[in-house]
Image (cartoon, rainbow, N blue to C red):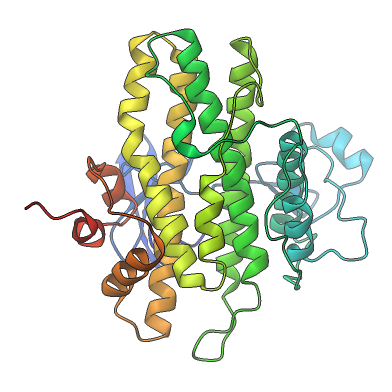
Length: 367
């Protein structure tokens, strides 16, 4: 299991193991007592931790990650004898195998399906150790998009309320567009801020890159699920107009890592948690259970993404001796247009570690 708690990065290796009953055991984070089932990494709080299948064969340890075997390459004869195991995915073929090199490559990839494929591949390389160098690469000023997309202002995109098949398709199409941008936002924060040195002279910890590679992989998974569902409903991504509103926030915060974390990963990502209950209810009311299942996957993953943004915002503030919550308020007021709008998903935000003190002061005051 990953040793960093997905809530706020607590040291799980220092936690206690307790019996959940029914023969199941849970690891408790020593910081906030979040529980993680040792079987699948699930938590009663709604968070999800990574759990890896470990197998021993002929004195060698094989760790099966989500996408491929890692650590030790296997011979064909070993694969034949091992049954459950599959060959290791080969490493990067280019001479520049740094993480930021591939981040810039993905940002420059216009086709969303290829963007997803590359993201999953690079995530596998990073997690398996095929890529170890963070490197340094200049990201594009804006990610590439397919030329046949119709781009409009966010306010001119019509989504409907899910009461008809056409409006449900429009909602799923809008979510797929958001997920494509979310893939790019994850790679951009890696490439753009890789060489940031904190006020103590130290670079960003490797855990920062681990987290945002995982986020990129989650967003790629989300896009793939949504694209597949659009196809099942007789549509496809690109059939409807899209907007690039999320990238405006990325451009506005391209000079300041704390501002990027605050606005993109703690305001916009958290807003996704807020709209989830209503969106889910619209699809459930129409009996669209397949879409409901996808939305639940998105929601559970997005909680961990908000937690990651909060974790690194808090970490940097502590290193730079800044008061976290007032600094967050200052940056949001500076870089986010308007006020935060209720209703808020208080429970979802709380699960991600974001209490009301973070966002209620940013709501328009009642007069």
